Length: 256
Image (cartoon, rainbow, N blue to C red):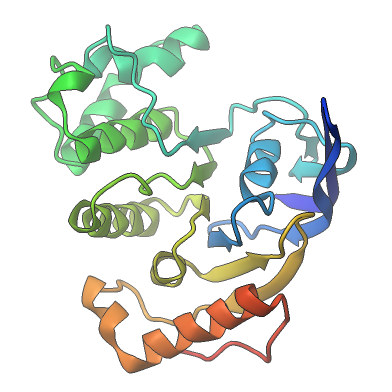
């Protein structure tokens, strides 16, 4: 995916809000890219524009040769809220994208994914009967069931407790390694971004611009306890400085 000069103004009752300013970025095929930045910097606006859910005021976003101006079948999104319909059981919620696209349900793929995320046997359960972590696992299955090439994730684990969040980070890392999907992941957590990403993009305060890009040279698979290592903590502090001071520090530290 190529983002070229993405600029976005929102019109409100009190005037125009400049959300994004000339954001340009190449998302490499098969990479895990995390986007960080202060609250209100336009991270989610950028992600929703990548998903075809927001139009840009200027600039463009392309997937291959196609300009993204509306939802695309090769792009799936996962939000902070699992967005499961409360009157549908888990199986019916996962089947929803197929119904909307009027395509036959790929039950073999769904069954494989349910087993992979440890939800096999819960198909008849309703959202109220599932924990927050289980609901997000179901959301991941629903998004991956249609086999997209690009997965956009908007702070998907932000509302989970710390233990469950660690579990989900391990899970999405494993799924990414197994599938080779391209993932763009929005988070407020610097540690989470470093743990998951091949590259971390830091955005400036509104209007959102790209302030810094850090390559993360940590071998995979990455265990959760790597976050307690001094060199990992040094990387966190280094990226935090770029957010706090709005500057582009020297090249990121390699963690090997």
